[in-house]
Length: 64
Image 1 (cartoon, rainbow, N blue to C red):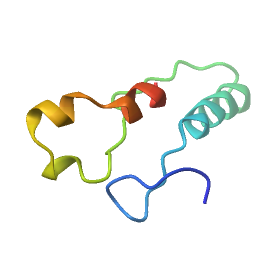
Image 2 (image 1 turned 180 degrees about the horizontal axis):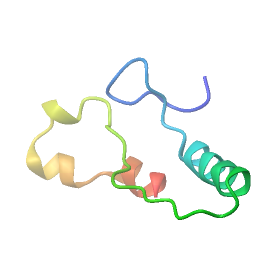
Image 3 (image 1 turned 45 degrees about the horizontal axis):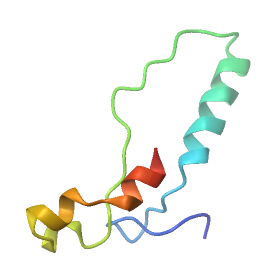
């Protein structure tokens, strides 16, 4: 396992992976523009939380 599980059991949370991938693309394709339209993570059990509890999300704060 490379990071904690997200809401989806097949998905691990690994922010450094996106950074490494973007650097690889940048070097491989000679610094072409790269656009990331969406990036984030789903916190396990988030859908079952109240709005107040969901807004307190230290896991997401550490992700960014």
